[in-house]
Length: 279
Image 1 (cartoon, rainbow, N blue to C red):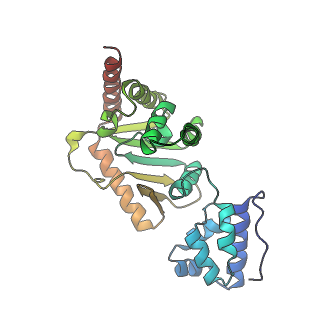
Image 2 (cartoon, helix red, strand yellow):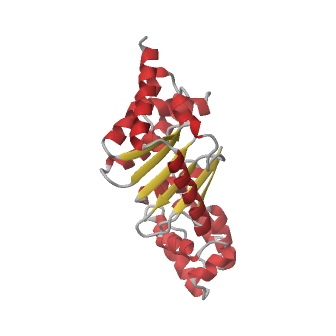
Image 3 (cartoon, helix red, strand yellow):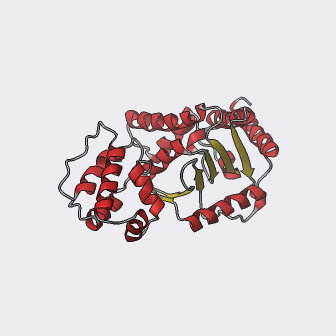
């Protein structure tokens, strides 16, 4: 590849980077599947990079530079295409949320970010960063609320959330914050914008004991699974892994309370918090 210029960040850098990748791959005489094999990813993943629908991560950029004999072009330019207001481990997942037609999520300890209120998000981030400046917390909260605007569309994406009962019982921010947060969740459900179910403590052992889980479906791309741990996250497109995680979510649904029972429980817990605030 003959030393192309750096990409202009003001001109759809991800799409331009994808076009350069397609040019370099074709020049090397490789199909998407063949290039994917060398990077240990699927051919469809390469196709999504070329189409600009997937974010190019630094580790892929380094491998592409080596495989396609591109010098350090992709490593130098993936930064412009990867700018995000979200942490590196979550940025790609946040971007994929905006493209998803359906999101299925199991939450173990916290109300999912897409369903959080401002005061709940403030309490969460303050617990994460107790010595952070107010400006830092405000920026984090603003980014989270911006994500939640995804639900301003009346129908898409379909969001199906399974909340562990621990999510309801953990008093994040105090009684008034929890009451408001749970009422927000039930309001979305009663407006038929989301489906929510509660996995009760009485269910005992279940299929997702290892932690939270998020699945995303798309109109024009294969489904994805996202798993995370503190300061770590991984977006997975391996069909066998996604299928296994989909079965896990189905088992969670089977062990959970029905949507009407779940709404009744969430509203009951919200009422308890309100009574704590106003005895």
